[in-house]
Image (cartoon, rainbow over all chains, first blue to last red; front, side):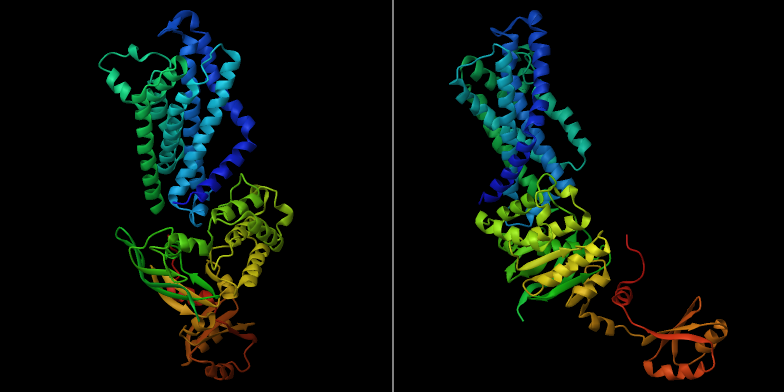
Length: 252
Length: 308
């Protein structure tokens, strides 16, 4: 498979991102920062420590990761929907020698890059205003979660943007699937809070593996390999699903 | 003459609906070929199969000798497509739109920069190349879409209703450009404007219900119309009396009255002298031959009813 087409589309998306980077970053930083200030600082006095770390430190890795994967999902879903249904640029790509798979790969890469840039920005802001710190070497292990995690959400965005023809449906899917997956996966509380009967189900979520793994790598320097595999395998499966669904939709 | 595009018993079914029914077509290299048909006739389905966006249910289609079923990538490298929608990227400038298209075709920067400069100049868009398409008029946007389809120097250019929604000046500008590139590439045009087909196309095909129902030059298609010739006779007065007189004549096939004008269909032009003799002394202001138009042919072949 040639990927020159993917590269061309990704370059286009990066050019557009570069043009609007300031407004994008202001918007993307506002949400996790508000949550951090409200929960991390506002609730700190009531919650104290969670699993041996201050509550504000407990939620910081999750907020950085949430920003990245949310950005990856939003970019993919809206970009694909807009290019397919409003601007018809997907159609103009498809009458060039570029394959359908190349278009999907490009959009996944773009979503992924958005996630990375925005996650990094939120991380820098959290570093700047809070005492949250970690060993630089932990970053390598964290990447083993962030990269497949962003790819996973980017692929999920591709699937949503491919299947859904109405923009309001995209918002509903975010409310019904994406946000519960993120919030129920132990982003703001330890998994031990769940009743024993629920715990195995919650642990089966790829988002649980992602957020738990991200937290463990950044705060304690551990590397939960099971969680890393779970996120990676889910990302690969979602990628295959995204390519197949996009091909099927384009053939309609 | 080399064949640029050929279909053989091409069929496309959507469930029970047959959108293309054993469609056979040949388009000569370097010609401008027009495809006409009412809404739902199957034109878009045909174009989507020819541009490899859709796969046929059965039959064959070849572009420059390449089979659409197995050589999609190679075919797409050879074709340019101007779709009905203005699929321009509103977040890229005019020039960036063209550069993206060139990169999707794998062109080298040195090559495509020169080519884009030439095309922008030729299409009168050089001065606006750094502007975003949203700030362009409809005619300029359409010209940019056509320019984009030409960046990679295609061998076959598909123009799917290229002038829909344009004002007469912009439409004529697109026509002029299409004429200027004719011969260097094969042009496959669909349009609802019969005048456009008449002005531009070397050959025209009319399709309906997924089938090819007529094909030829404009003149050949007009000659297919049966029913002899139609004359328009304008009277100053006593229209009813003379209309009745004409209706009673053996060589008058059909007749209708519109205001002061009587439209008379004759068996042949030889009957005209008989009509003129019968109207001797009548208050006739004008007698003129009404030329058959492509629209007459189109309506006679596809019917006058409005399609959903």
